Image (cartoon, rainbow, N blue to C red):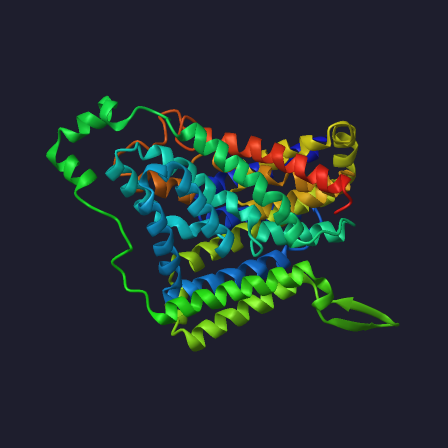
Length: 453
């Protein structure tokens, strides 16, 4: 690497580090400063902003936000709560499956904030250490992003792969990622089942109970959604949302159903899936507004829409800055890394993971790193196999869902440790990423060997 490359890489890393310190919108906005320095001070040619991914996120979170405004999200949470309360002794296994499923349906892990206090409440009422289900449930809420047909990471993987000569559909991506991530969740849940001391044997927890105010705080309240009345419009909104998902998966599985357009000179082009998702999601949002009494004003004030817009800014700034650096030094990167990835192509998983630790966005990791991986000559089936490794931002516990989980746990057993990295999410996160990546790699190799892709 030249001196200029090193200096510019340090600028990129510094922008990511400073942005992560401020969090939220700052991660994308401060990346803009890094981009400005690269362009105006070092004369690097700016790359094209990742607009396709951004448009998909906007369409998906608008649809999910409108469903939340209609009350549909409350119904989904209520269904999940009934299942969890029916089997409280299995909360450590069922809670992560519930958060995982919700994320798959909605395309964002931020839908779990209402469910997390309920998970903690059920564990406390059953005498189970809340850290056990809460830690893996928070992890699982982010795992689902690589398994959702409307998540930016999945759609970006398909689009970038197609541009790089690896034609794969969204259902094929899910065919690998969903079973692999379920294996990761199962193993992490098993490791969490007897994690830490039982509450009746935990001296710190028992000491808290000696304080009447603390005892009242821990056991005096009960978080539930079962007392909420779900309107017919809320149920109707969920049906519309699920129908939209089914339409997207159908078109992805059977591309021949999509219309084709005359491009001139006798050439035709089929409607691309990124546009299909945008059209279907925006249309579904409109149907909810018209037929489900969903308030647009309430939608943009909801947690799902606001969190989604934060993700838009993050991907916009981070991916644009990082792509500008990598695009300008692609030959140098190829010269440095080609030998390594030729011998060990799966080693790209470490790069995916490390970048995710810095930028807190699986979609941004895919948009930023996947083109570089293809330029290094790594085969598409290998990159699909290591896709679970794009989730690494649990490593430093500054992500909103992890912080919220710590706050929701009234027992105080779900913690961010004194030394930062000894926190409640490290063990289940590492177990999941390692096991899910190994499993996905094996499945991808198997399907590739069978000629499925």
